[in-house]
Image 1: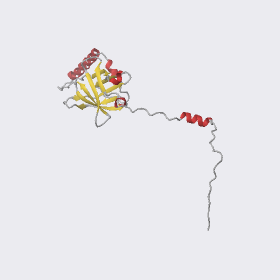
Image 2: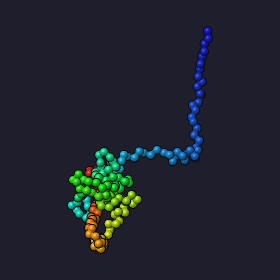
Image 3: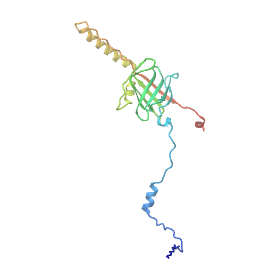
Image 4: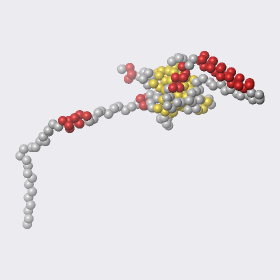
Length: 199
């Protein structure tokens, strides 16, 4: 018969790990500490253009920008004289292209641009000038021209075009298509006052 006996050796003094201060480890650990999780962003923070806007020139005119239900890259602009218009996100967070489209009312809408400045909370919408991919804000810079100057330039162009048609010997009529001026809306965001905002 064979018997085995196993006994474990117990230490007489408890061992504690010794900590040797290492400046390299301390500097690494101080750089890489966990930060608290940020709060979840709201839809208004992700898409700051969403909201209602009051015109800066006409107190009766308001537009509302809402997010499309199926595609987060589209917004709908309500309150325009043209009707309800769709815009496509081009540059996040708030530069949109308004493609040429036909509204539900049957109105033809020319191409345009929507830009929202979230710092000053100002929206600018222009319909009637093509979207510029390289510099979308450049289409608004050309609207500073005076209406009278635009009319005199337009009249000069009309006279030149009609003069050309009169000098021809054959009797062909050329139709001069009058370019309609772009439609511009500039407004500030109407803040929704809630109980949480008042505190």
